[in-house]
Length: 461
Ligand code: ADP
Image (cartoon, rainbow, N blue to C red; front, top):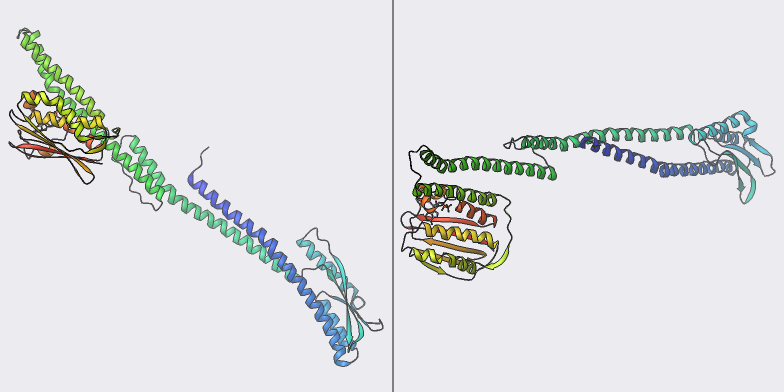
């Protein structure tokens, strides 16, 4: 079962906050309470010594026992939880808290026992006695026996202190939990809001709304990357959709003319208006061949125009490749009396040999097609920095300024009637451009009408 991002975030915040509060409580109980108990025991020791000192001082000051002062010390000590028994050197009682107020002494011990049990239900404590001896000028003058609830006890103030400490922990814990829920909600909203937008946009894209883009801003790197990726995907799909629509329109447009010609010729022959002479049938056959060629070209175009054109690179000498292709063209060029000048220079490149051959073939066949008899075609290969350059220059018909920006567009032919003769469908340069760009290179053209055309292919090493 899947859980929402906000639910997960809030849960993890609460979990961490609860764990922290729990850990702090355990630590404080272990260390803080232990320290507090040590402090209480030290205090008891200090109080006991103070009492013994006070009794001893009374004798030191007066040189004999003063019962009323001793009694006051004893009553004060009782108020502080100490049950005194003071005897002189002969063992005679000077003051005995239990004799003075037996009920009070018992109530005191019972009260401290209750205090300790309220904090530690299994507490094992009881009445404990400690005896201190007193001296005056080196001679023994008596004993002070201090009875109390041991090993130590909490007064009401101590209990209030410990309870306050607990309340503080509970309050801090509660506030932390509340803050963690608020922080979790804020964080979750900051994260889930843009993600929800991305989901909505992606859904819109899946429904064919390719123009949809996410404009949501985020400060989270992963979300920025996600938005970027989805927008890029939408860009790609929009481009593909556009290409698809254009291709359908172009194909329909390109096929209409030869099909219409064929249809009218056939109808004329069927209706008996035209005799099916060999010439007429040959003309129909040529139209069919044209359609056939176009379908073949379209197949190639579909393959090469794909953005994910697969390039299988290998290292080879560009000059050697051009030389081998030129061999196949030699006869055609010779038949037209076109001179070929090849300025050969070995330039090694990393490229897809087969696909690059297609580019060279397109450029050489165009140069052949659009250069009149006795013309000249110059081919040059050189290297500039890390870029390999291939020039194919002819002194043929040239291309007008108006047509020049469009010649790489699919099905664009400068002179449609002449293309009919040359057999071009206007996609050779489109394919060449796609191949060169898939290599990370670029293809350019310069031309002057009536003077000639020069194509430049630049390929990175
Ligand atoms: P095609 O198959 O018609 O030759 P291309 O895509 O190769 O298609 O070329 C597109 C158009 O560019 C051609 O129809 C032609 O008009 C023009 N063109 C290409 N190369 C040359 C050239 N060397 N000289 C003159 N025109 C050219």
